[in-house]
Image 1 (cartoon, rainbow, N blue to C red):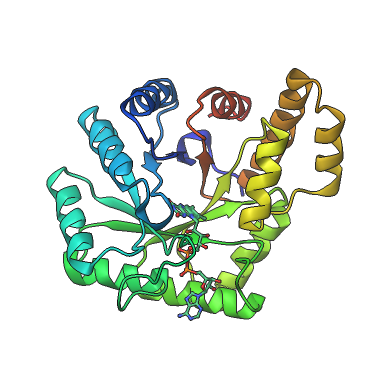
Image 2: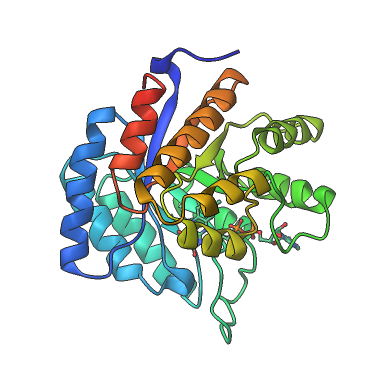
Length: 280
Ligand code: FAD
């Protein structure tokens, strides 16, 4: 059953900035999105910790503005000591929510000793900081690209939740049935934690195709064909993308999704328009 707009958990994800100018621009985007009263915002952590400084800088700047902010955290090549130091820095800044991920290691990276999967990081955070953080982890309604099967994907997801995660955010997808099936699969293995759909607004054909190839998200053929049709007309493409993503969100909320987590790519307008269409 659909929730009332007030009961929809709303969050916005920012990509870690790599310069002071990009941090300032992110803060401006936040000022526009905060009008939608998000429950929290999050900031990504670059592959292998490549944008770690940008993540920390943006997280602290957002927190100073009073934002409820959840840093993403992955382990890369960092030592356990440096991960622990970062956890304590966040605690000191009043941060109490994290998104814990394995991350995608650049080639040649070996990984922190003793940590191979996100479940190891979740267990480490619990060991280091007990119940201080609300821990989000990643979920894959269309199955993580490295998973051998649907069963192993859900079983390893369960392992991550059992290690101490509180709730999950999904990879983006454009087929609501994949999400509902994932919910059913969670229930079948006894998981009842909140799984919030990750929503990627559609504003650009090349970027979306590249991202989707990398992360294994499927762009339905009919959507792709329409995007190709509008390739020379940015306004028509964005209007079509907005219609498709609004309809997806409506279907998800009507089907009982607890909220929406938007991949903003540090832009406010596409998310704002979709939220307004939804009455949020
Ligand atoms: P895991 O949960 O470790 O899973 C990775 C793979 O290993 C899966 O196939 C899983 O089934 C398998 N697996 C898990 N445990 C085991 C086990 N014990 N034995 C064998 N196989 C196992 N990436 C970034 O670099 N920075 C970010 O900030 C970032 N933010 C993200 C936010 C969200 C909401 C999502 C959905 C993804 C994000 N990613 C980010 C991408 C993510 O890091 C990649 O999808 C990565 O490939 C997997 O990360 P994970 O945390 O899901 O890994």
